[in-house]
Image (cartoon, rainbow, N blue to C red; front, side, top):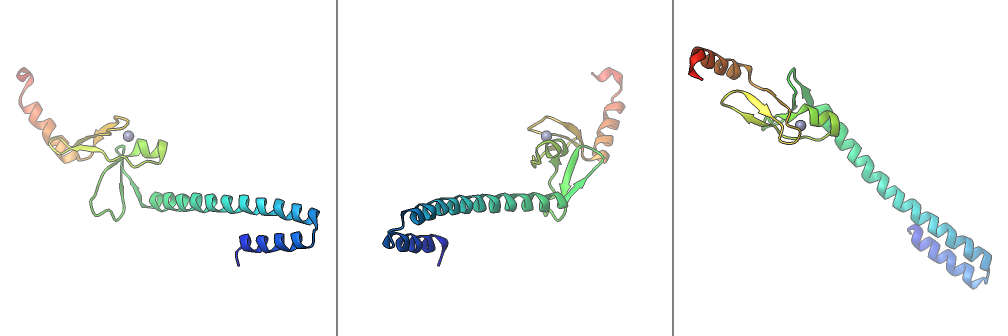
Length: 133
Ligand SMILES: [Zn+2]
């Protein structure tokens, strides 16, 4: 029997006994029990969110540049370290594979995710000489 049914039965008994004060106190307790039940639902939801965030936090891999990756991520995606640090929000970076750089579509943080590609691009630019521009 849930508490709602238990209160209903107790209210019925108090009503039959014609005990107005007991009936009133049971109504007050019933209202408090409903408040506690609502708070319990809210706290369970909040706890689930916190557990989810904690599990995600444990998967974060930091790098020298301002991007993060996740352990056991089959897609090997890159996320913005700045957005994670500020909002605990995973924002996928827009990576440019032609020069190894990235930009965050949310906060516009930029950086290099592939130094090899970035260096070869820089070498190509410097080989062009100063008069190519
Ligand atoms: Zn960002």
